[in-house]
Length: 250
Image (tube, rainbow, N blue to C red; front, side, top):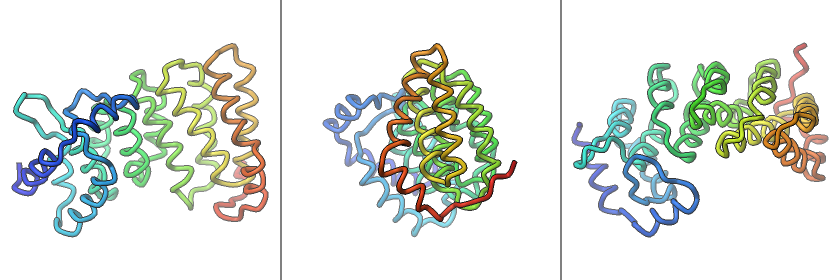
């Protein structure tokens, strides 16, 4: 491990907060990795400073992700979050994405990696669809979290790239697992409210189709999505929205 990586780990350990660890657990953040309870509001400024000091953040990110602690346990939760925040999307490889997604063990590391890093890579649309078919809960969540992130952050892609996402949403909406159904819902809402009228209408149409499926999870996703998509604020915003407008591609 590099000197810089060791220095960062020591700093993280020095600001460990057991009270925050308990608070994180109450919000369902109970990963298998070591948790130090360092707030994301501390980690993000730390990452910003690291990027100013370190030239090869890719190498450092890989080191922080696979850190092994004295107990033999692999991974420190906050070190992995830092890895996500300092990594450069252009340096991310498909092999790395596959390694990291298999290591996801909590919703926050899954969501931060997919919406703060992976959704900015050229492989984002491909991996979103691939991962949406996975069986493991956080790998599948990663696919839909990526869809949610792409809906907001990718400002140039044409609508046709988002069309397959609706098929994935309908296919997986019956999955009753909490972290999956919430991510499916998140993806549907974001596609509908963040782009343009075309995708908005398709999102509402998809939600209405989900209501007809004999599945408690599908109905919850549909009703929750429609509650937001049909709200006065969203309807008004869509009707006046000019950004991301792209003509239908089919």
